[in-house]
Image (cartoon, rainbow, N blue to C red):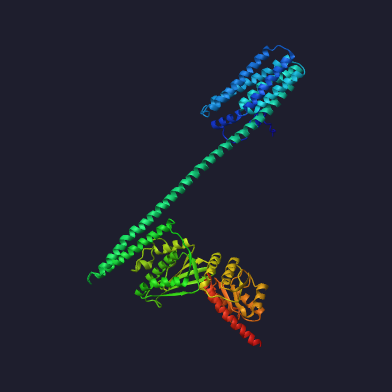
Length: 634
């Protein structure tokens, strides 16, 4: 096998390509080249000053040596002309607004200017060194080299101009020095190769840096311009959205008024007509009246859905009693339910309060009640509709139970779609347009609530509308209610308060103290709370505690048991919680805890009147228990 011998010419060519190839991957476009030339010309004054200084220095050397100055003055005059041409080039290039399109012409002129400058300084070496001697020759070499290197950054923007200037300025200098001092041709070639290689490599690197700088600057300009355009577009879109929102608001206001007006007038005329027609036409008039009511309902639903889609509904939350709220809804719907042979029953703790928009909540529950009346069966085993409210695990849930045919799994998945009606709606004459439940879903989204369904075929369905109980808002409500002490009974005595949430604890303490009681509070059953209970004696009203006091910590029931162990007697307990009452009672039974006085359980959100009433009861119970303990001790 023959050994592999690389092609020497190919290897050398590849070396030169790798040595002189520009490192950046950006394409040198006409615009990029124009920018590079533009930035290089900013350094041109430095190069021209260096050239003028070198010219004056060399002329001063000739003058001090008292040699013939004719050729020197011709050379100096040529340099002045070159400086003038360079300044003219710079001025015209900067004034040219079409420099990118004319870049070929400008590059050619720039290259010729570099060639003439190189020839000018190349001539200086033999001219000066033949007229001078000794140290003056060294100064001449130093001046020519200094001027060459000072002009190098300017010509590096275009590598052909840099190559021409360097070769023409340094080659005569090298040859002159070699001939003056007898340097061999080999050494001369080596020096020329090293100097040229250094200058061209450095020029290539400077060219690369300049190109990258221009490319990055161009990219930044494009990004800034694109960002400016996008900001302008976004701002215009925002203005258009505001204008559209205002137009929609005006449209809804006009539609709400203009559509309702004729429907209201039609209803009035139909009522007048009912009293004037005979028995033959009365059923027809009543049917027309029912049709008008359905049209009015449909218009109302369509407007509501459209307003929700465009975000035109505004939420105005306030605090209200859940039981009173449901009783009012039941009273409004009861006549219609009784016409269909149904009853409506309300099941809710009278102390429960809700904090939400009552108008939106009423609209959602009315839709659920209407559907319950529409699809419930009067011939069911228990023909009634149940409205309930309960607090459980930090949620306040309103529920509507019906006695209808129930829902299939497929119907549950599509029940909240707009204009979708289930099989019961299609087979019955109950009516409906498939908008009621989609409105319920939209209102739940507006209120931050969730809607869930429970159903069993043949046994009816339940729709649950659940709201979060916000403890920070609960604290604000309690602080607001502390100003209502005039409507509540005053308290005298000591209340022990255990609540892990600092906001709620502070609010409860302020509220109870506003009624005249002394409150000693803590996040847990601390020694201060225990000592205050012992010192209170007969003045102890009772213990107020949250049921959940933190993960893995004793519950409010446990705290009450520990407190009674420390006091050596029973006292009244008021629990404030979002946990359902039946779960707490089951927990007490399961652990076989014994209380002389049954704990009072108040559900969150808490009502000030309910708490005041509970503490009044607690005071009476605590006094009774204290007296019983005292009599037993005697």
